[in-house]
Length: 173
Image 1 (tube, rainbow, N blue to C red):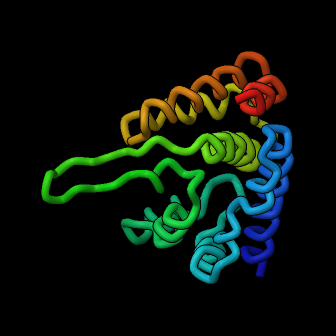
Image 2: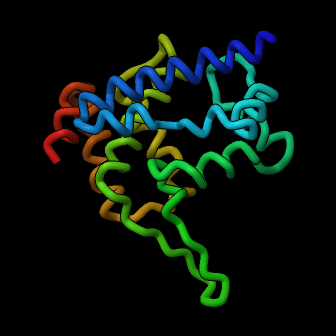
């Protein structure tokens, strides 16, 4: 029962932050609709099973246990604010095609990253943390250059000037 309520508390805290940031970025509807799939049976109870302490995503624990994360596969396939949603594999041509993300989802992606960083890092959060995490995963990221340019600029603004400046930048786009 502790994992159930621990996960629920983490998800609700994250959604609240994303909503606040989406409003500031000028996309309030995306803040309301953000991550509704986390309340589906697959994602919610899969995450409850692997919930530990709210300091890391349960998908990491599930991936370590099974070699893949059913929760993540379900989530990224239903949420357009994840760049992974925009990746196509062409098996005949043996290549990966990445599509540019519509601006509204790039903005939501930034808000999601900011909220996730604050949710998981808690008191050790800094405005540089989201940028550092982003670049630490560079080797494994397939993201369209146009999408990356907007996201990276917002992350740099966050790191240097803080969240209000970064959200104002996104709102101005």
